[in-house]
Image 1 (cartoon, rainbow, N blue to C red):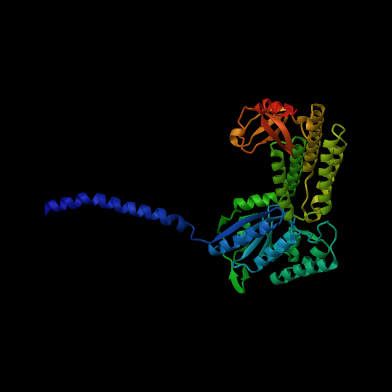
Image 2 (cartoon, rainbow, N blue to C red):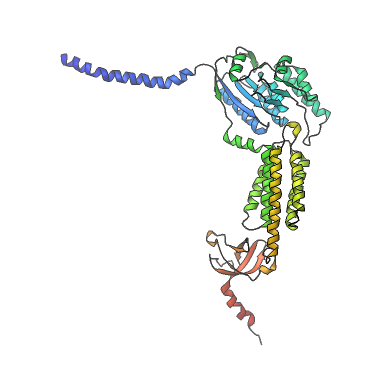
Length: 453
């Protein structure tokens, strides 16, 4: 019996250690979740131009926030405006959201301009930080001109319907569309355009706590005091798409694409300039597809491209480059609409125009120098030249003629070109040189020199 007691006592420390280990593991697992048993809110940021990309992001964020059981979704808003169609999509999603949506126009100095006005009005709770503004929602067409009365009245009715649904000031909503009216945060609270003023997230959560809102026909009381904020960030893919939908980047891509194609024309060969140019222009066209484009600006940019190409055919004078630069600056000014808050900044426009001018003149100088040497591109003088084959091992046989690379193609399809061998140019097909191995020259005189008599 005594032996058994001693054995039991010896097992006690081990058992106690196991119990403490189990309790510690349980605390590690349960502790973090227990610490977050209080209310949570999802937050996300809408900054910049309102585009279809932003509308898709908010649509997904609302669904995720509802599935996660958050008390509300808080959208930090700072936008100069954007596409009315995208704003309509966001408004429709807010009005039918399965959880309360709170729009916070912040930080100080932020704006809920144009399309941002409708988005703010559509929230269950609209909040503005001090020193922020809202309004100026008059629609314009793609040329920046005033639209017809039917469009204005339809947009005003849209704003009025949102205001009535959310119980906000209808007069301001209509005036923002018809008259382009804009007010500060304090005035917006005073006239009932928004619900309250809050400098930061903590003040917002305290201010909306206990407020009752209607979500899909059901009354919901917000319990946000001391709630934990969970950030819902935009995906990397959407961030890239939204970045492309930037007027400054679109202008730079158009300018870069023009330069790359210009250098491909000035120095044809490997085609790298053409590839870079086409890709840049395609990306710029994508950006313009989601931005309010002024087609007069597009026409000026096309004119600028034509003038830069003309510089290559009259190099050294600089008239084409100067005219192209002037058209580029005017095109940048007209390309996107200031009335919707979408413009190319001068700090992007001016340096880009100067850089394009300098590089266009340089391309013209390169062409002039090339014309001063023995002709290599587009001339029959290249026929009969002896060249050295390079890059044949990579199945991309090429040869350098002057400062230009040409693709090589054997005259006899059964002939394989080898790096380092000497070949003779016997013909030309666009940018391809038709060549034959030089050893054939020793055979050709005998063939052509036979006297039939």
